[in-house]
Length: 420
Ligand SMILES: *Cc1c(COP(=O)(O)O)cnc(C)c1O
Ligand SMILES: [Zn+2]
Image 1 (cartoon, rainbow, N blue to C red):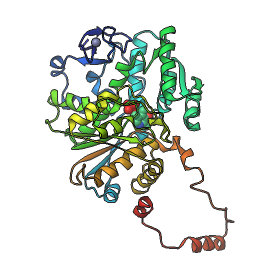
Image 2 (image 1 turned 90 degrees about the vertical axis):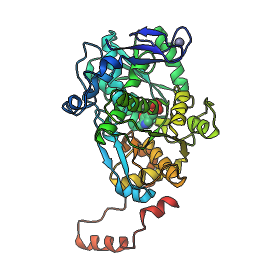
Image 3 (image 1 turned 90 degrees about the horizontal axis):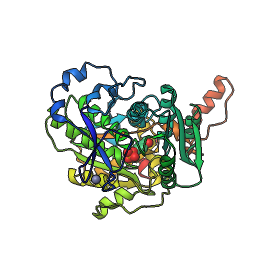
Image 4 (image 1 turned 60 degrees about the vertical axis):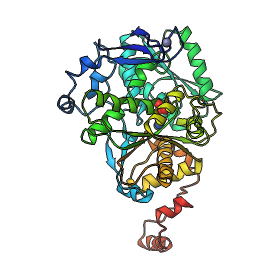
């Protein structure tokens, strides 16, 4: 095996087992690889010749020897976004569009795919998770496909589409009257009692590695080059650290030229423990009580907050946050300029990017990638009352002529409606 669990702080090796915390110093475990050994088999040519899904980077993921592909997740489009760029005062802007990640329409499909490969390897017949919504959908969908049972723990008041999009796969859904952070604490206790594979508790080190594939794909899709900047939405803070790890690994293996990449984090102001710490120059987060419609990012006590801050700071990046009305406007802006319908997390990314351009922290001529991590059809409830359908007309030309008449006032440019 070319990988094992290692403590992020004391460096002790823990082999491969369902364990996420070092039993000596209580720090998180991380998957470490034998990069010397990987230098041989991992080449651009071999990767590029493989099927367009995240398993093309198999050697850089902690996959068991008995791994067999059940879910071809990942390899989502990297889209040029010229019209959004114009609206933000940018030039070279791209979208990493995980709104269309398969099978469950968020980047969480990547992490779950790796976690479930290890869950099967460790012999679990039941998988579980605490979730702000998208993880629930991904675990439920992929458990069904892998013939595993699933227990899903969520805050009671999640978006209806995310709850239904979990139940439909036959998963057991437990709604909890409390915040995500309370749900997560309960799950740690359940994991001690029940022999289940909790993807983000005892399988967390393996799970988290799946996020690296976002970084690998960005580099490969740029023609094996690193961008100047990436803007990443943050909940637990794992994705942002793993995109950085992916870029570092590609450099280490000689697959891309070394280049500084600024890493920018994005949060909603109503739940912004990480961006608040970055702006204040603190190395640790102060937990918050979430109050935002960006439910997928509503983690008040982010597990990887400390490492997210470190990643952002050491890269020369920054973190920003935006209000809930700005999240909604940003979703509309992205949809109207680029035809991409994202959920609230993607709105957070776009709105924060807008701020970062205004502040001059991102320069227009630099190559910047925005991570669009989830699909807008899952959070349509945020538009309640915003798109009232008009009264139907009769199937008559006269009715349509009247309708056209009513509509033919000059359209306001998109930018105005956003800046209002
Ligand atoms: C979970 C999630 C994130 C944040 O991921 P972390 O690794 O927890 O920071 C971003 N966007 C969406 C849509 C998510 O579901
Ligand atoms: Zn340790």
